[in-house]
Image (cartoon, rainbow, N blue to C red; front, side, top):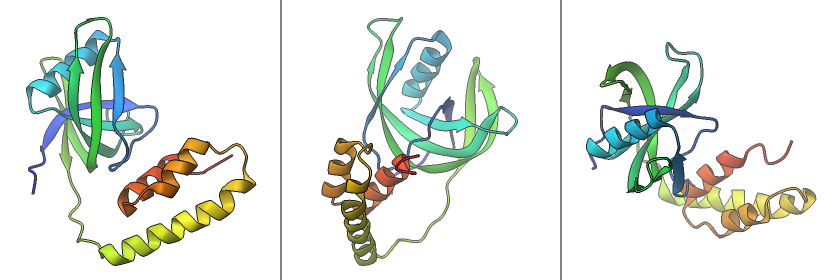
Length: 168
């Protein structure tokens, strides 16, 4: 098993991302966030992503550990990095290191799931989506195609969770 960091720099996004979701390109124009990404890259490439909430720093304690790669700092006014969501985490506390907010996190100890049952449930979810999607013309066609062709049940679950509710 991969060793998970007990702490990493933290940032709040407007929307949460889920483990198993696609790679995300994050572009930073803010010097504070650029320093935070540089610190994350220097200390192993991990970052904690959360959303605004009600804890002591104004964040939600529910978070996601991401791995950063393809750090592009050639233009200091537009630093970008590729992020891969690894797993969910819970923020336990904070500290400042060289002006950068670092979150201490814990990870839930979940038992392994039954792979056959997950495949069955994924297939059922895809069938329901295939039957109901034509009823809502506002649904993103690329999203529908991605969901219907996804073969990994965990990735499918996370893809669907990012889009729920499917329409307003």
